[in-house]
Length: 397
Image (cartoon, rainbow, N blue to C red; front, side, top):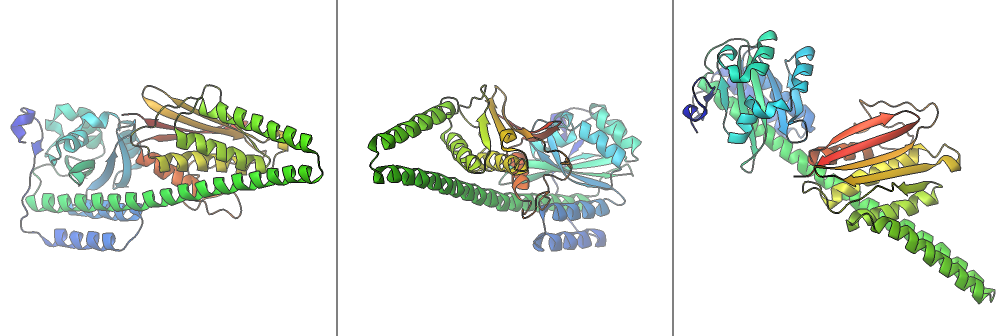
């Protein structure tokens, strides 16, 4: 692809060769390499990469954007960009798909804007950049296995061509960022699969415990010689089992989700909590980006969090409602529960790893939910009043 493919007045498309590097570029490469091999968290490494990219661009700024979701791009790191302008850019993430970052991702090549004033097709971004004191921009795609997963935007105050050595290094930084994100995704995916397996084991354990109690009741009646009572007890259990399962399986056709709801219902019942499936729930298939393990992680942890939060309420008020609706464009999952008096919510932190309001908990469940939702390009909303509802929306392709 060349600049002529985009028409006159468009930004320069750069396919850089490796060239001689200056001291700033070499030092930046060393610092980024150290950050990557240090084994730190994804956010820490990406912040370091963004910081070094800004330094290479000389008093610039850098922003790492990940593709996907209803909002076009998800911000993974921000450096050197003022809070006011960052908020303005966040409001423009959806439009960014047709802006410079979107073009870089779609074509898989770096895009160099030497002077924001000369590119009217990027007016919304250029006006904001000029107002923030930036005159030039470089967009570098981040690739994993020849697939673009996002872009790194580097900004600087000075207008004019981007030096070849800077472009070389910033492309290398983008490759490091892509590798860091891919490794983090693999680690997080493994953690979610283990969490899903643990949850399945817990469900089987709860079912085994419940069945053992029922068998003991039948054995007791038979030991007393009351065969008719034992038969009535078994018939009643069978009727309840068929009714409860039919209510779920008739509306939820994805077997792993139906099985999870049945198991979670058994676990909740043993804790004195009623788990209800909303009458308008329906599910025929999952979004392609949502694996079986991740849907178990999302739904299971949301239910577990809701159940744990209402154990302080009187038993008649302990009701958790699950709503699962597959629309034309997205899968909607809602888990609602009464909000106990005096319970405070920190919407900004509740999905952070390690944050919890419940003693004895590791603060991992909702963090795993956030990871799984992000991996599926979904969004999470929290609505709180007399009740709390956590709503997850994941797009279908």
